[in-house]
Length: 94
Image (cartoon, rainbow, N blue to C red; front, side):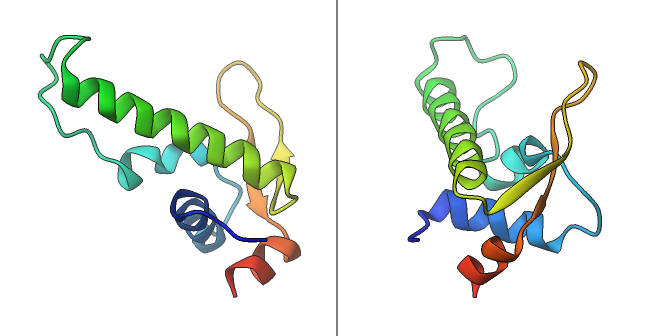
């Protein structure tokens, strides 16, 4: 399987975690906000960043669908799913 840049970086970060993690915890590290907090919702930089964040959600789904990560603890209303990398995921990173 060929991973895009976001999938690869997200999977790499998950692989480094010592315990199950929420994939969304890495989103701001991969694509940090590049606009002031006071920026309007229709600010072009904010809109571009939101698109990047949505791309990371798509990458998360792709990793799960490809069995590169597995859900260890399902979301419970207070936190998102916690995942860990699978053997298939480790092979994909190698």
